[in-house]
Image (cartoon, rainbow, N blue to C red; front, top):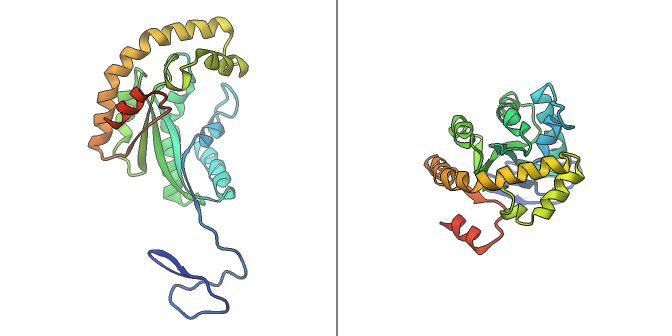
Length: 226
């Protein structure tokens, strides 16, 4: 197998004395997968409701092992920034821990694969700007997507689907669900309108590539393009 900076350029039978040649001993050569958006690491930090794994780096290493075993060689770890009322509030707690664990794993050579960070920005979160700001200058932040999980919008445009998701997981009682939905529908649109231009400008100023998340209508797509 012969390669240079541009990639593999020859796979030949027999031995080779060409520069950059590697004898793979009969193994197969396959391209590595680039994973742009996985929430898998979060499961290692919160393996069960209200249970937080005590060693952040150990959680990241367990995630890294699963990526490698799936043939992934570069992963953009999706880390949620900003929590909205009544919906996975723990994410604000683990957000800086997850970033620090990826930084530590990269620095110490603890990982098998290449890790970058994909910031999933919950735009209607009250705390989104203050939580986002300290991390935007970090070189491992390579991508950001803009989300709105307000009931009635995008992924949760059909509120019955949100009800099935919440009640089916045991995350909430029906009374809690109805209370949370009422508050989020009352506060979400105004927070989204306020935060969207601020967050977009923060990310653009740092030249971080932007994506939108769960676009469901033409208006969602038009907003993303703009």
